[in-house]
Length: 183
Image 1 (cartoon, helix red, strand yellow):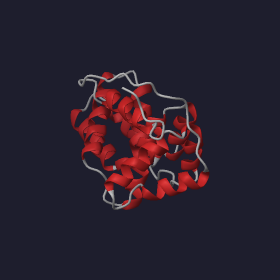
Image 2 (image 1 turned 180 degrees about the vertical axis):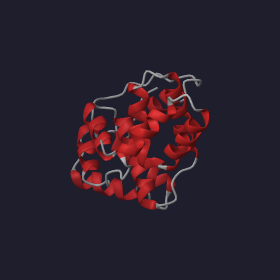
Image 3 (image 1 turned 30 degrees about the vertical axis):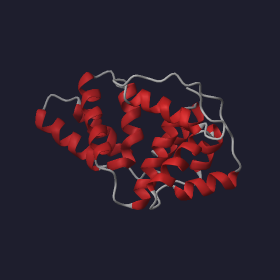
Image 4 (image 1 turned 90 degrees about the vertical axis):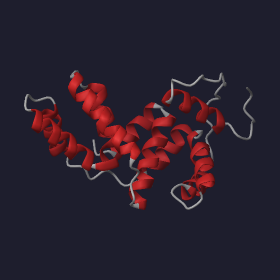
């Protein structure tokens, strides 16, 4: 299908949906290049994210997603860095791969309690880990986090920002996501 020129974010939405839900038939949509937008437009759209209107929030999200690196850099100045204790996180990752089942269970519970703040760290660790056990448990933790969105508005916006950076998918967006995760 064709994507209306005034709504290039629809193509990104379709691409992201197909990536997140491979069980569905993917629609062949050509995605254009990044669509940089003026800073005031990004600011206005970011204000709609986390608001009370889910339709406006969704449209703003996908418009921001077309902004590429410019929006990734914009997010750097708008979202607080994670307050996850990196040493504690690393210690829990070691426990996830240990021999003690109870310690693995407790470590997974603690990682899940870290909430959305730890999402990018979890994803990064999953990519780098060679342990099947660690990857499986971290995947479960991510599914639990996705199933229970944060109640705190600031944490919710942070979770949305990290999701937005994943959809943008450029190297700059990945760098910003890791910075926001505290790494």
